[in-house]
Length: 275
Ligand SMILES: *[C@@H]1O[C@H](CO)[C@@H](O)[C@H](O)[C@H]1NC(C)=O
Image 1 (cartoon, rainbow, N blue to C red):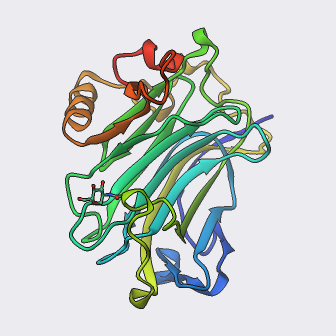
Image 2 (image 1 turned 60 degrees about the vertical axis):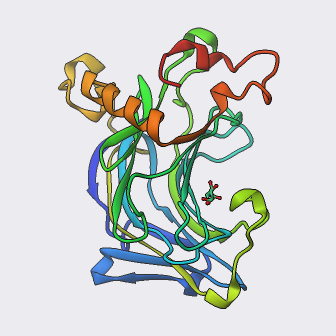
């Protein structure tokens, strides 16, 4: 398979398709802004037209304001099929004034259960913030306003490689998950506050797009500039920021959940200091 390296200033009119809840997804400003909404009848969602293999994908999101309990806003990369790969940002709503939880997960070859959750150091409903996924042959990095919050290294050595065989699309959705999302499902969606709305803008993809006649990695990785997203690994400064986030804002880490994994923590957790 061949991929072409592209830089897309994504336009919602051209580069995405509404995947469900047709009338509840709206595009404004000549494709620069998109809103998803949710009411009792359904939520809504969109997906990229392009299929990607490796990339740095950015999205600016402003989450549901006020009482967002029971709602989940998602932004993720996923391949299709039973052994799928997936890199997830999910924003779990909360009662007014209570903190959103940013839930992350990584599936490789159909296997997930690698959740890490965070609070944010700002109010994600007051303004747009940038959420990015860097995915290259070395690692997957989740970033919030350019601050790395999570890294998943290529653990080929223990049989857990970086997803590299299946092209993925970008997906975003807003849906009702009040059976589990907020305070373990205890707080339900307040439908008197519907419709709920989340906004998206500045979708940007520096990525390899499939299919193409020319290979994305035509040269060896080492011939690309070291600052290319394709070669990006954590710098010393990134590591300091990641440590700060993990120390102050991480609220759940599967790697330290010995109740859930009583026999042994997952193999990839042992590989790096930054889990
Ligand atoms: C919602 O707020 C409660 C109380 O502050 C907190 O325990 C919880 O982690 C927050 N997030 C979710 C998704 O329930």
